[in-house]
Amino acid sequence: MIGPDKHHGDSFEERRKISPAIGFGTSFAAGMAVFGLGGHWLDTKYDKEPLFTLIGIGLGLFYGAYELWKLILITNSASDETEKTKMKARKTGCDSPD
Image 1 (cartoon, rainbow, N blue to C red):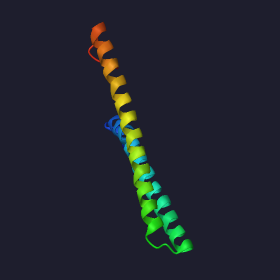
Image 2: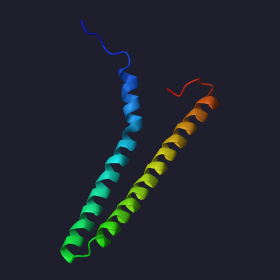
Image 3: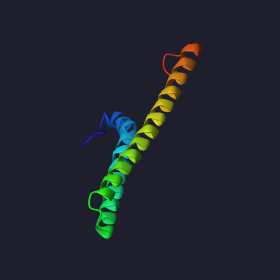
Image 4: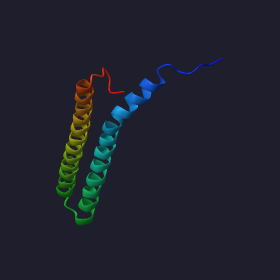
């Protein structure tokens, strides 16, 4: 008989923690693809071979930096909330906020 996985809760928690990073990676790749391919399309349309492709790649990198900034803000706010919860638990005499 197959029993329940004793690490199932840990696995879920780990996946929950890395999901913002996965979202960032996906957004970064999609931004680079859209801007890079859009630049390449403009290059072929207006016969300005590397110009628009380079601009598109630059815009894709800028968009990736913006997405990274959002990830950092989300991570810091979540970490601040966790720290506040721990501080409240210490003040009330509890060992764990759970």
